[in-house]
Image (cartoon, helix red, strand yellow):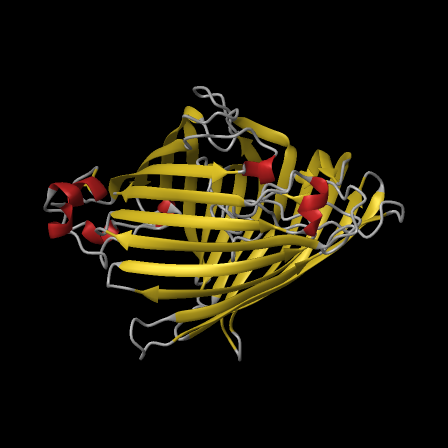
Length: 444
């Protein structure tokens, strides 16, 4: 069996699969699996290839989807994701990374969403050129690629939905002793359902500089960034137009036990349909793990304030644009997105066994502004303000069990109950949502 010859310490699969480096197998690729991860292309083994992939099978079931406004789905639906990649290193400086995808949907009564189906296409196809300059490793990367920064509140791989997110463009990555600085200019990729039909979304450009600094006094780690987006015909609270938006922000974080924290704040400015943009967000995620107690429980609290538009008549747009956030921003059910929102989110997690983790969380949502609606995880308007003066959106109780069968296989069971608040009762059918899901994932 694979687990008999491979250890988790040796093969640590990354969310960004191109960050895995199996050059350490150069002199020890003795069994078939190790040869799959390191296949030499020349006698000196300076050029080599590595193969890997993922198969994810996921079942989801909603009761009262979209708070009762969506057609009733009697039996739920099945999502499958298949990813396969080849990582080719030609010497120490040149590299080509290729990843293909095939994602499918079965038994869903509603029309398929763009994030759910992609029959067959290139998900990533980029090249790297590396060199060293004054003790700084510099990589030029061009092509189709996944991109993820910081806490993934702004730029994410979108792991929750069936189709992960990729971009077309160029990046310069500079890595040095105490951190990293990335500069980039990218266009998001539009997922289309047929074979080799994905295309560059030239209406949506993302550019900027993102830096990470380690061993910062007092706060351990810090991120500083400047991000820009240019979007054509985007929509905020039922108003469409061209958007030029810039974000300046920072993040302080520490992810070592027992106390972990992640504080982030940013301000957005620019123009939308000729009006000014002035938006912001601030978030905190703090947790403590009691490592000496039975089952090592972890308790935590997340909370954030995300601006919404104060008035449609004041020549200023205050709605925050989360750009490219995690698809499952507040759980896999992905009911509410990070715009015009205040949320309070305590959570608990514990290791029931060495391989079984149980978690439970409770999230309460309010509108930041009653003159703006609520938005989905993709930034699109779900319901407008609809002349409702109510702020309370609702509360969400969720739980999950994650079982690690082996270094390669994971099973996750999830359940969510969303209880509608006064605002949703004003603007929608107002029914509570019940959501269940299980996800079986195999990586190699």
